[in-house]
Image (cartoon, rainbow, N blue to C red; front, side):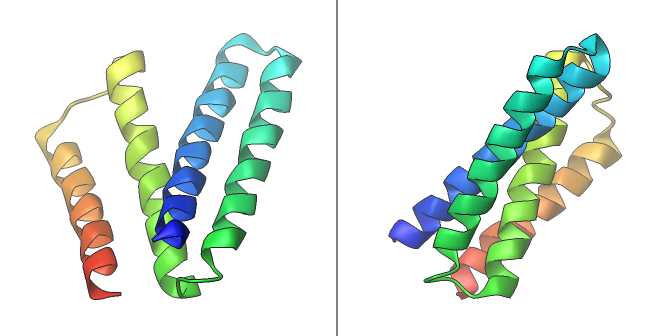
Length: 105
């Protein structure tokens, strides 16, 4: 169970890193690069911890899924990005596949 917690924390750090990347792109302040490096560092660290109990293929797929879905949701909620139904359907497919991987492992 702890390995799954590590994986979720890694995914959340990945989401936060994407947020900092967007903040840097919008404001061009170097502090966001520092935040980005720190959060991506934590993301990789927790991903490596999760690999001690979860297969690499499953962990990587879930980690990228959390980052992709989370980054998209952050864009929709905070940056008024498109809520196109097809876009939401694709997010649902990624989320469903991520849950399916967890259930199958």
